[in-house]
Amino acid sequence: MSAESSKQWILLAAGSKGWHNYRHQADVCHAYQMARRNGIPDEQIIVMMYDDIASNEENPFRGNIINEPNGSNVYEGVLRDYTGNDVSAKNFLAVLEGDESSVTKRGPKKVIKSGSNDTIFVYLSDHGSNGIFAFPKNQLYATDLIDTVKKMNSNQQFSQMVIYVESCHSGSLLSQLPKNINVYAVSASKPDEASQACYYDEMRNAWLADVFTACWLHHSKTVDLKKTTFQDQFAYLKRNVHSSTPCQYGNQVIYWT
Image (tube, rainbow, N blue to C red):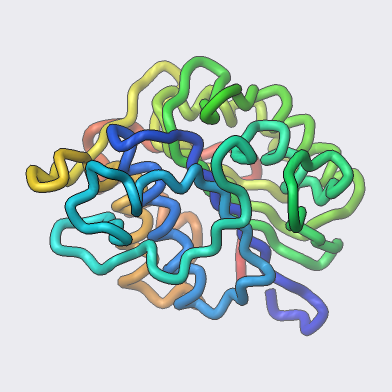
């Protein structure tokens, strides 16, 4: 945002665990690197990931996670604010809402401490079903997500919020988002549609990324983010994501400057 008193907050969450779900944590690590390259300080970024990939016994390159063929190590320097069983739907909603008292974990309870002039970007990557986004041991329900966002709007906890969801049936998580608040959301797929993985790596025996996420990260890296708009990015996604149907919800006139 252009006002001096405003901040940009970023919440990144991978909901899966296990080597076979490599791509979800790789997606989140890459998104973290993009945020840092664009000047967002660590104190305004929160990362939730199970953190069982980099040192996994199936990883032929210990300490290394890539998100594209022959890519750089996106795990290097990544924040790990919430790991293991602390990666939960309950903690995700508490972090988003800035409700430190509702966070269940030992150690620091980092949450979004946003104000009325601040912007928030949320990105989730995992499996999903109708009205559900999966976390390692529980589920995030569309009703709970939308209710939290509406409550935050009523409490003037942001000026604008953008939500990107990478999962099957991700449109069903966002379809009830109101259009009359400053929240814009993009799903990887329609409510009744699967999203797809990409970049299978034979040496790692894993999919490195998801198609929708690979596209929005590529677009974000190849344009001037100070001049492009979310509608520009959505048009790019519609042109380049062929394995599922990206959809947009909420207030579609968001100008993040």
